[in-house]
Image (cartoon, rainbow, N blue to C red; front, side, top):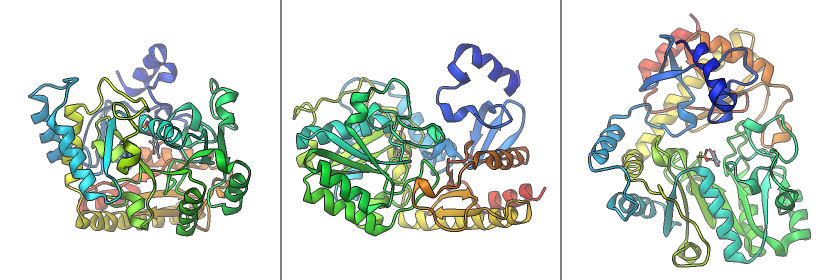
Length: 419
Ligand SMILES: *Cc1c(COP(=O)(O)O)cnc(C)c1O
């Protein structure tokens, strides 16, 4: 069966044919490609076509598909079994490695996704502070937990208000929202609710609704105001952690959050999330403290081995090389856009992340994103897909460059663009 037939069949057994909405190619005039294998920078579909992949599983695959070191670690781990429901050395090694390389983290707990990590961070903050409200920013996505599924992310862009049915008014009433990069709005919220805010959560590099890099002063301001009001500050580094640099945006900016959440790169393509903080906060978690959290498959040994192999490859040199490659790619892509009817597009880039958007300056909040960018994107996406180039299939999703995007791939990218 080809992709179209498989998708048709999927619609029968799976809602919308997909197990995560953004995979559905909604709003695009083509059906999702069914991928049968991948290697390096390439995806291979069941229709016999291959694509230079800039989605990279939405971020985790910083070393590309089937990175030899990660594959070796997975195979070795699997030989010993793949779930024990008991203590094992793999997760200890990963915990020690991360805590020793990121200065502000004393302890870490592994779970199965970014969503779980943030869910735990919210509960932890409430348990630690004894307060109840959380403040989030419009357009930031923190996973699909009820309390933060409000004015969130790309899969939901275009949908208004409480982002999802099934989220109760009671829940939304505990969640406050502000526009990104807007100090005054945050000040107002603190003036009104300051004593009751348990947590201010932000993607320190908002990257789920375009790429909306914040002024450092704004993030520092959040650090200061939360400290003043004894609220906790969460940096949700599920995308930016281990991506912008080993210690994510926190390290890059030199701003220390109270709690940090990781996902994506930390598991190297296996399902891993993590929540981390200084010891005083982490000691609130069960079995030490009164904040409950658990997981049958948490710290799965195969996923832990993959994660460890993945993060051990992340050196300073690695990041500068990756950024150099990304610059080459975005330069070529911008030139092609200029020559092919997308001259109003600019590419916003940060480290190995980029996003193409019809705008002339850097965007810092959801409000600044031009309206109705979906239709033009649809056209762009389909042209590129036809040429064997796979972007993340949504106008508000960013693209990811991996170590597998070497010079040979860059040349091939250029060739395919002008083919
Ligand atoms: C992807 C993402 C999440 C959710 O992670 P899942 O593993 O998809 O549950 C949360 N926060 C941010 C910033 C993300 O990018």
